[in-house]
Length: 249
Image (tube, rainbow, N blue to C red; front, side, top):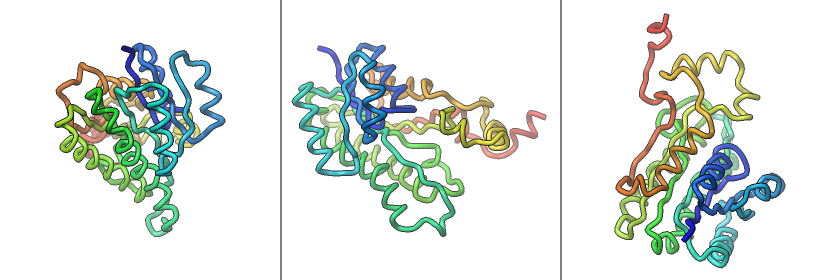
């Protein structure tokens, strides 16, 4: 029977690249996003993809979505919790509404969708892959809310692995480093790009497709004995300290 993957935040970026790779693998993909216009623009041109509009931070919307998924497909083999928001700024200027907006999508959304889909994943001994970030592994400026949510997602992944393993459900987390996206190209100055390159052993940004490859591997049977793991797909960024520029010169 054809396998079914749910990808949240699927309308663009890493979520869209992951959708495309699943489709190449012959899976059916439930593309989930709250941006209805963008989702309706990209989903119809992808054979095997079905669009579901849902705000993952809304418990009632998630419950309705879970019912719709089972009514449509009857099974779920993999869940990719990719939906996220990023609001950056100084720690003193992060007001509580900002904090809650980031928490609601990045952390609450992962919890809500995973919990709602656990019964379906039990039936298939499926996989959960949560999308963390290098910002959850190492602190950086201007990311107090974002980095904290991603650190929490990392631990939530370990909780899921510990508690759901007895049902055959695997849970892992992919933490992307700097990725070449339309947004990063637009907002990263040459100085920022150079600074990132100086700190990354592979000396370049990653691509959305490279992150998708890691995600789909962890969802596949090739990773059947891998659970509770945190994979930094970051060109070596998290592994290094200071000194690469001096070494290269």
